[in-house]
Every structure is written in structure tokens, then in C-alpha cells.
Image (cartoon, rainbow, N blue to C red; front, side, top):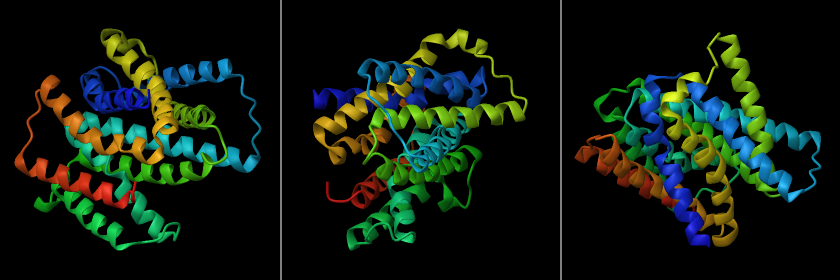
Length: 281
């Protein structure tokens, strides 16, 4: 069952950028993010109610979960959706999944984790891959790539906070509460910017939206949590190392994107770097 959950998680997460790309012509990226996480929190909330698990949290833990929700749902996922709109789905997925590189950098700066030669070599490879994939080696950086970098960095901070929170709080509870705060922050932002929040434009792409909302933002988190319990956090987390390659294949098949030799070299370097800085798993 562990392997099955891992495969389902990989396919769901890898398809996110590819499935959402066609929707970018009909709805605002942040509005799409809002409604897909509404679906996600509904699925997870139902599971939480069925399990009837009591939740007792201190103000400090609630504050951490609130910050996690703002970093993940409001910032990182919104940046990622903006990246999908403005650049290729394969590029957005590759840059986003290089977040272990940023996790290592931030953790080293804050002295939260020991810096080793393995991580140092991984950072060199990972940053080299990012430079190639983002096009920074040509001294250029497009809008979509910039948003993808922001998504990866903010998700890295979210991961660091999540490591501490998940040690004492049930993972589904973490997601439900953090999603709620993230959705609240995103709603405030959309209202302040006077962005129409109606989901009506999604009618034309309803199957894709339901896949993103119920599948990726709901069931995807459930299968990922189950994979962690069955296989261990180390093995389960390799889903983010495999996602860029799978997302690239899906983008070629369904979006007819083309990839260059430079992109493939960058993808391999970024993946290798992420693997090394993730630790001996």
C-alpha cells in the first residue's frame, strides 16, 4: 500500500502544473488557488471529522500553523500558479521542486541544521541547475521564472516550520488548520485588490478544476501522509525529486511543450543537488 500511495501522490503532484496551465486563460491564478484549496480543505475536513480525533492546541502552535498556512496556501501556491501562467509548466515544476536547496541554505543560515560536505556539494549542483533552468546564465529572468523562485523559497520556509509542527501534531490536522489560515489571508488579499472571486469561469474547465481541488489539494495530501507513514519520511519525500521529470513528460505529451538540452542538463543538476542536500535517506 505504501508504494501505491507514493505513485498516486507522484502522479497527482506532478500533474498540477500541467492540468492548471489551460485554465490560466479563463480565471485569475490566485482565484484558482483559492477555490482549489477550498476543495482540498473540505476533503481533509471530512476525513478529520470521520476520524473524530480530538485537537488541543496552544496559542503558540496555532500561531505556527497560521504562519505555515500563509507561507504555503497564500504565498507559495499563489506564486506557483502565477509561474504556471507566465512560463512553461515543466520549468515551473522543476524550479519549485528545487526547494530542498533553499531549505539547506536557510537552515544553515539559521544554524538549524549541520552543514556538511555532502550538502555543500549538493548546493553547488542545485544552484548550478537552477541557474541553467531559469536562464540566469544568459543574464535574463522572465516573470514566470521569478514567481517560481519565490514559490520555491517560501515553500522551503514552510517545510522548515512544518518539520517542527508535524512532530507533535497530527499531519491532517496541520493541513486543515494551516489551509484555513492561508485561505483567509488569500481571501483578504483578493478582496483588497478587488479581484472577482466567483468560480463561474471554472465551469468550462470543471473536470480539470475538480482534479486540482479534490485530487491534488485534497486526496494528494492524504496519499502523501499515508506514504510517509508506510515508507518513512525520507523515502516518501523523494516524490519531489521525481516530480520535475514526470511533470516534464506530461507537459510534452499534453501541452506539447519542447525542452532544450540546456533544460535537461539543468533538471538533472537540480535534481541531483536536491537529493544530496536532503540528507542520507
